[in-house]
Length: 301
Image (cartoon, rainbow, N blue to C red; front, top):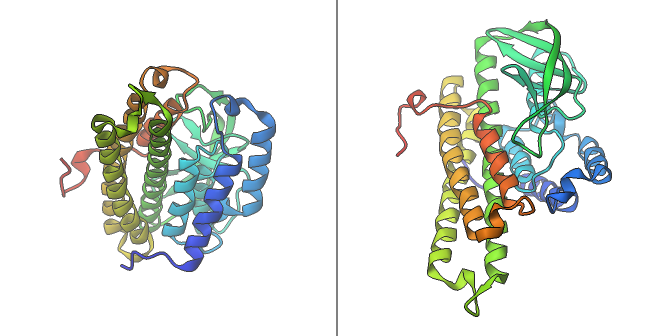
């Protein structure tokens, strides 16, 4: 495995980061700005990134875009449509405005009309209904309405690789969300003064931020390997690598996001502080295609 990104992959990451920075929410109030959301949705649609796999993108390239969108708290669908597109690709048919269903809800469903799910060797499609309540303020859930329609069948190998991609995508979102929360905390620690000094100059705060950075770097390592494994290893090995990445990234992201709240002090517990939005997104991504420690054989302390 060559861990270095190609020039094209670096450019893809930079473009995704720029879009997230330019049109992603910069404050909690921005989450309720319909004009910004409309511009963001139009920009994401224009990129064609919702059909990355159909366009020949690798698991690594999917992870790069999803990670940057998680960092910028991008609040229009990407992860769900990418996974739905992967299913449609293997069925040889396009399902417009589709996301994925997990359990009884359509996830990442803003503006999506259908939700796809894997049931054994069958791919099911269900219409989406009204928006459902959820902790994540950046990705909407929707109820499922009407009977499920069988779109087609897939092989066990395809189902396993799709599951690996789903775990990799949610892991990438966790890594990105953690990076965003850590950057938010670092920026605050540089400007917030206590006892005449920036709080980031105090060891108690600096050590928390350093530990968070170490967790993020570890998450990036396991994520890159799992993203590469989606296309390069056997289905069983790809799923195993993705499970490890999901477990590690979920634990790390929760710690980093909770640290961001702590570094902000009292204001970190208020609605106006963006730190809780990162934490909410991390908790939601953790529960999306969840992994239990018993499902891996390597052991994580």
